[in-house]
Length: 251
Picture (cartoon, rainbow, N blue to C red):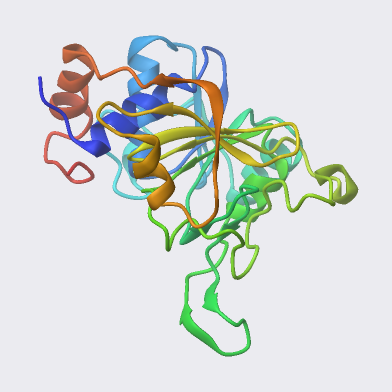
């Protein structure tokens, strides 16, 4: 079966999740990825949403983190305060999903301003819970289309910390975890021992030159770059017929 870039990103993101992980789920591609993983290889995945639902098993596609469908079948419902303080700040979240307007070579994310902070060209929505997720989850997965304007060498503003820079350690600020993978529409990236982004897998039909042309710095590649596997027919059926039958988030 043919598939879209978005469907490939969903299946690639789902592969990053392990059985028994606790994951703070975002709406859109992260939600599709988490629910796909739970149906396929991670039946004990514990999905937690920002609104405070713990162990959610939504029966239909949630349109926001406050959608009542998230409460149906959930193990428990906490206040947003408890969700962030007891679960996230308490170190009880294994995985968090993040995105933003800019992602730089060290996995720092900007969702605050484009341009100078005092006189920006564009003012963006800001952090929401993203900074807390980036600071406290044991590992984070970043999802974003790969475009040069989205992947500059340095973000205009650090909303959500990645590996900061070559001289600063996350431990210096008491931060847990850090970015573990970057899922894009062209490749999957990880991070080397210095916290710099490195390409680990190329999607089918994509070349190293394609990735470099869409990146704002000279990005590194592992010695033996693998190919991302294509979605299976069953995965595509689940995505299209069960998870997003109306194509709300699919291309």
